[in-house]
Image (cartoon, rainbow, N blue to C red):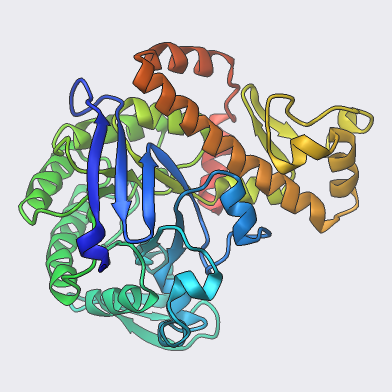
Length: 385
């Protein structure tokens, strides 16, 4: 069965409106995904430090790969010859691919944008490439993914109105080209517009005319204040049909998942949980736990007593502290496994609360005890990412 023929989204809990929590089910050629869902990031066809079976053990039902990075290395045609990205990386569950628009546009000093596409120099070897909407879809078709993203014109959330408006119009035109280039591939429409309400509403309404199978909200969580991000999510979702999935791109902290679900988001992805894991930070219901802290040196108890991940089932916090203090790679693996399992459990709990009609209570209680990262530190971290 083709990806397009298999793709379908159904709501399993009817929301109170367009900006309200809901549960759903994504049907794909490689299986069913319960939503809301967090998608671990496997940029180069690997979730860093973990085997595919270990990623599945965390509860992940779908992962993300990056078309831009796989186009550069090892090359999409090589992956196609080897049977597609599922076989290449030995992952038999659904895969969503990001076109790489964000990565291409982040090469500010190395790229030139035209109506035809983007000319850029590789961040790897300096070689020149011409990345077009058609090429982005060629890459994703060759990979054999279940859900694709179009090439979009990405601008930062604080971009001036004129620049954001130009990006919206180009993204609309490029989306039409993407759909024409790969009509058999389920390709979401990405909504841009910075943090300008009028542009977000306009883009959502115009994108709807193409009848996309789903919608992605892009250009957020890139340095703007969280209050502004959530205002933008709300006004965008208010324009989108309830019956189609919504994907908030690049968002992955626990508190943001809860807040996004409250506003009707179905899908999330971010490198944050794996990156924090490799740097010795664990998610818990009360906030981030820093493994290297000296206070953890003699703690003969699981890092998180209520967690059932590989690290918490078998090892003490003292042992993880020892691993990180000595730069042992096993520490990176265990912490990454924990963070991905934590987010999978978090969305499982959120789904159950929605079904039970108790999500608002779940949200209040979770946010009351979760200590968030300092806003300035968070913005500085996002800029580095």
